[in-house]
Image (tube, rainbow, N blue to C red; front, side, top):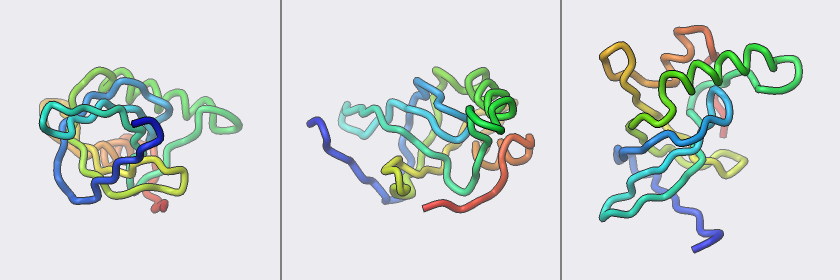
Length: 121
């Protein structure tokens, strides 16, 4: 099935495991699609923009990436698909367990000053 793009813009909550962090707002996850089917998908957090891990933002970008890795790499999260962005990454609302409560990762990164609210498509 190489080259197949799966789109699930249906607001269903799916369990996923973060397996690689690209930067503060983009990561790869193994998403449970149901019926014992899992798929590696690149996920871009919706509604926010985090600093890049290169260029003039490199230092803050690496700090943000490290925060996400330290707290969520190899952890289960809940993903709600919101469609594709212009780079064909899955935009998603992602819910994580942080400080013993479930929270939206986009909102968490903004409140921790790792990202700003910004809409992309």
